[in-house]
Image (cartoon, rainbow, N blue to C red; front, side, top):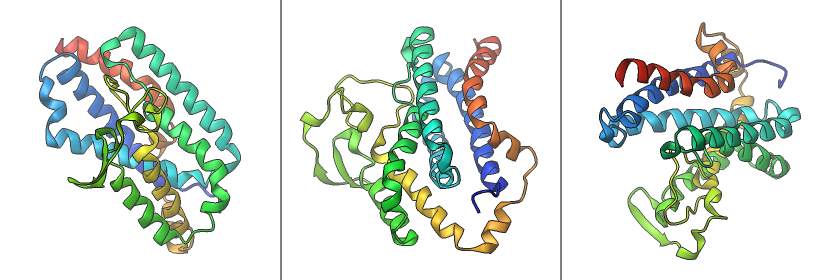
Length: 245
């Protein structure tokens, strides 16, 4: 089963990539170049950004079980490129520097799942996926200092957790700023939701056959997502500067 190529999953990733490129172009025009600095806080822009992130992370968790043999190398590679992105943004555009962005998160999530896989694989997929998603919602406000569901605060977290060393975990230190911050809490629970959804998917032959279908344009884009991610932002910034400076 792992030898099959689920091209529909690649297409979902490709759709997220296309949305990501469009979103970052708008961000460069409205926020970086100052055409409308409040654009990022608008509800449609926020929902758009979250839909892209959720898709990437769910698909990455789902795909983890398709490439176990290469996950150590993949996790290290994603972390390496994440550090490169941090260095480049810190030098080229310090006001928009990226600390522990999506690539570092995905790299750490891939590596963290490696030792957990034997235990996770024994869990029934439906309740495990539901439980992981509930934990994701519960930890959504970790950065704000509390645990809860929606706007309901259930537990206030101690301020001593919010230090530099725990910032990648989800407890940013006072004054921390990153234009792309994806800590392990809460996002690792969404990654695990995708991991467990694969267990549900793998038991249904009809779903597996449907997932093998190719989607023109989107499938090849999804298969080159890392390359596109690394190249798109300089190109978006260049186009934004040429046409909207």
